[in-house]
Image 1 (tube, rainbow, N blue to C red):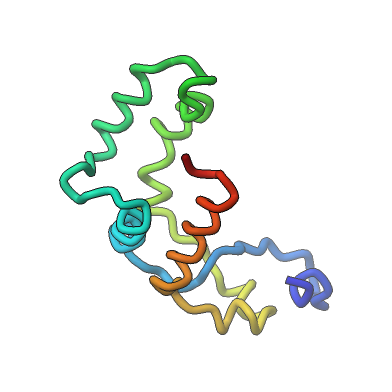
Image 2: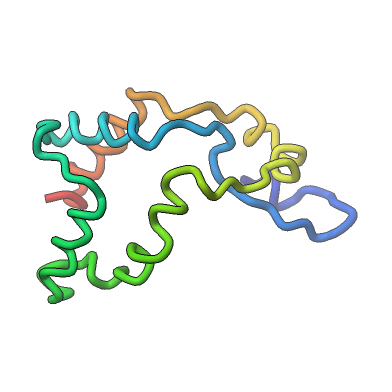
Length: 122
């Protein structure tokens, strides 16, 4: 994002940096589940998953506990498209941002496989 860092702007604008192409989270989760070999019938609603997180309060055994306030108060609002950042300034400055497209299934599969290779997922 060098083009944003060195952009000449008349003021110091607030730049929201995210992929400006919106896409359904359900599609992303479906692909991640497929790459991780998680059968659809093993999927659980977020509220049920959150109860499971709360049931294991040990942060060593369950690292999700560390971000429990965020999961309880902010995650759904942010992850389900209810928070839409204004990308006008960032896309006006950055041709990279303007040219960004939705993540493809192939890219997503590559990311998840890399996480597996790097042992970020067990």
